Image 1 (tube, rainbow, N blue to C red):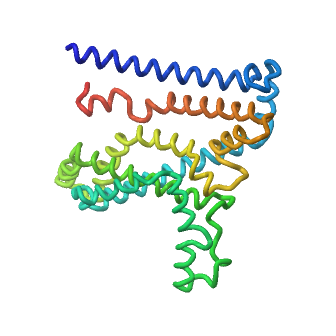
Image 2 (image 1 turned 30 degrees about the vertical axis):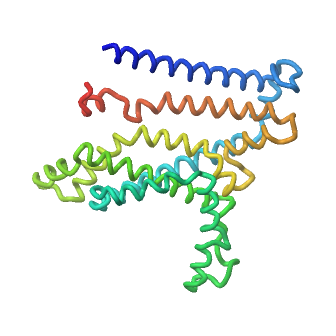
Image 3 (image 1 turned 60 degrees about the horizontal axis):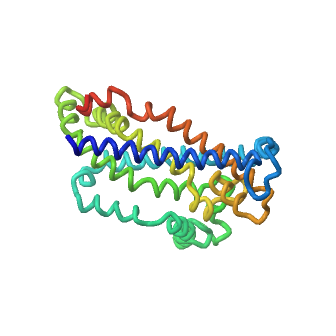
Length: 291
């Protein structure tokens, strides 16, 4: 009993400390963006907000960041789902699952470097296409790194998302014993494909929604991969914030805090709106036996 009370107290204390830190950072960012604090402060003003919002740089960065985050998360989940549902050995072999833990130890900066090594015009994929006779040289290989469509960045972000999703889906499959549900469905006359589509996939989807939300936010705020593989204009929001706040032009620093406040508001709104949709409802609790 005493241990349970201590767990609750420590949990609320941790949440309070994190909330205070977040509130302080958000308050400082808002004050800096309004000209109230900082070395170059000339008094409270909305000029920095007007400059940031009236230009197209912020909105293009938001659109690019959102599109890449949604596409990479969706493609990563579909790829991981295909692997888990299509390979029984992957679901049961712990040694094979352990191999999927290795990519998780690669830092994002190294992932970006490897993505450039593989996808650049002088990289491994370009050399392989030339060796197979698909291209006549480097000039015939499409530009995939720092291109206007973010193709190389999208492929690298998707590849970086797959290992964690594969491990989560395999452990979820075994934990809730989806094979038993599939056996019951097949015994009632359903085909294997029908059972996978209408039994296994919905069950995996319900239990992976919150992880997908976290991964969406992670991809939306990615910094190393866009810095190494993305184009300079437009830039993803995290790179835009870093470069506008870390450059020698001090007059642009308040606009960087405007961008940071916009990002913080969007991230908080996404968590608040999507957390219930991500699987934190009463139905999921009842199904898991917590209700």
